[in-house]
Amino acid sequence: MVNPQMVMYEEEFNQIQAVVDRLVRDANAKVVFIVDKNGQLISASGDIDNVDTTSLASLTAGNIAATGGMAKLLKENEFATQFHEGEKQNIHIQLVGNRVILVVIFDTRSSLGLVRLRVKKANEELNHIFEQLLKKVQEPGADSPFAEITDEDIDNLFND
Amino acid sequence: MSFINYMAREINCKLVYYGPGLCGKTTNLQYIYERTNPEAKGKMISLATETERTLFFDFLPLSLGEIRGFKTRFHLYTVPGQVFYDASRKLILKGVDGVIFVADSQIERTEANLESVENLRTNLAEQGYSLDKLPYVVQYNKRDLPNVAGLEELREMINTTKVPDFEAVARTGVGVFDTLKAVAKLVLTELRKGG
Ligand SMILES: Nc1nc2c(ncn2[C@@H]2O[C@H](COP(=O)(O)OP(=O)(O)OP(=O)(O)O)[C@@H](O)[C@H]2O)c(=O)[nH]1
Ligand SMILES: [Mg+2]
Image (cartoon, rainbow over all chains, first blue to last red; front, side, top):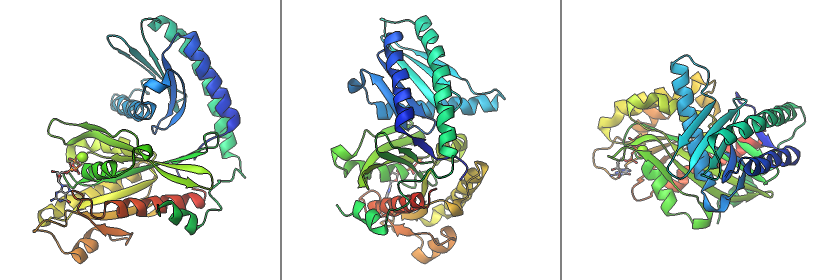
């Protein structure tokens, strides 16, 4: 396998969630979420009942993949930051350690300056957490919960 | 690359529908979307041109149920089949856990099918994957049309590694879920090996 398996444990999840929760408050944001580069949602906070975070996660990853492709053609490193300005809402996208994507959605209650400032701090913290997580995943003996599943388990999934 | 979330007790896998332009990849996803219970699916997203050709990707999140207390979630993507969208196809293959090759059974699409399989191999190899090691199934679509190649002929041309394969009419749904189930099974079996 080229990519190490992405795994999330309770300990790191709680650390990440704490960073994301705090960022919502400190940046006066509407929604903050973290997505891996394949579009899978890792954590979200804020007014998440009113947004489709699954769809947003996939589109964010597509967006980062596309700009990453553009960067490659220009022999640039990744474009680590993106900002999209709407009439009422804005989106700030930050690549964290080239592994995951931090997205902040905010409106007029906040400002780009404030969001940038708070994202910078969160970025450092998240980078650290994800580095730890990656180490943990690569440790031997981190067994997959699926090691024991049977053909029957898999078949049952499709029988309803 | 699947994503195991111990906190949410979820496993997420990425499946990609690949194949030449107009072979019916988007139609597969549309049928799955229509026939899935609301609680088991999210919104389907299609980034398409005005003529409904896929421009970047289609996306459909599905839940298939639980295994040993873990929710299994599959993210279904299609690539744009048109030849000149190759850069986008490469991006969508990133992190893939399973591939469905949708072939267009019409005789005049023979060349397009072969080019597309070859393109799939090349694009996977560029990212360090091998099609032979990945959960992979083949679907022969548009079996309802009059000008189609014979099944054995298609098999010989496209499915050289003899992976599970299915005849389909995606427009009416024939073979669509069989194809999906087959690749999902292979992906879960791969996880058991600790992939
Ligand atoms: N007769 C017939 N037509 C089909 C079948 N499956 C798809 N089509 C039609 O073929 C056309 C193209 O289908 P799409 O699903 O958009 O093809 P695609 O592979 O997504 O094409 P790109 O997005 O360009 O890569 C549509 O008009 C479909 O209705 C089938 O099984 N039989
Ligand atoms: Mg399409």
